[in-house]
Image 1: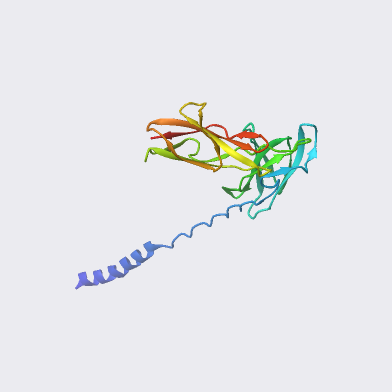
Image 2: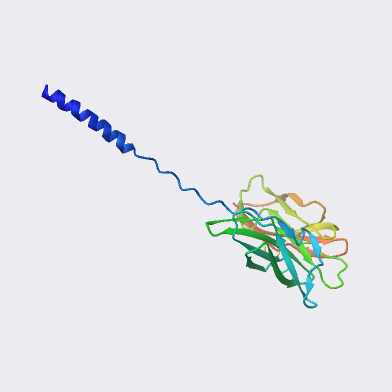
Length: 235
């Protein structure tokens, strides 16, 4: 009888302990919102910039402008010289920044939105423009943007061929064609010229080989631009 009484006394205690061990669930700490994506305004996409302030025969100052974004404390403006490949980065607390650039030169640019409350950043689209030079009557096309295979990409042999793709653009909208150079050396030979599409399908490849390729964009005025060498490896 005494044993039964002890058991009855212990049981509620066990129930209380089991119930108490459940505890209160921790509420996840809310994460700060990410900065919003900036919308680019000026210089306009694929346009000739002629409204900058002329500094000299070789330079002019352009006021870059983009939309202000939510949850953003600062912006990083990245500008790339499409002839040399050199990139510069500058920071701004507002949605505009004045930058002095070379005239008669093509550039690309994008904006990264940043916040002091999170390490997450948000990048805008990338636009291209041509900083006009003195007395310029026509503009060379922008260097082609390689889309596939991308630089350093590893691909499987598959059917033994690869499709090369790129995008081209020009201020004057007068691209006449593309020449594709392709091979296993860092100075690849011409594979096919006068291509009017922005792709070349069924290019023969071999396994365990690194390939190099580039695209030369030409326009009706005889101007040309070079995409630069890209490489990929076939497994």
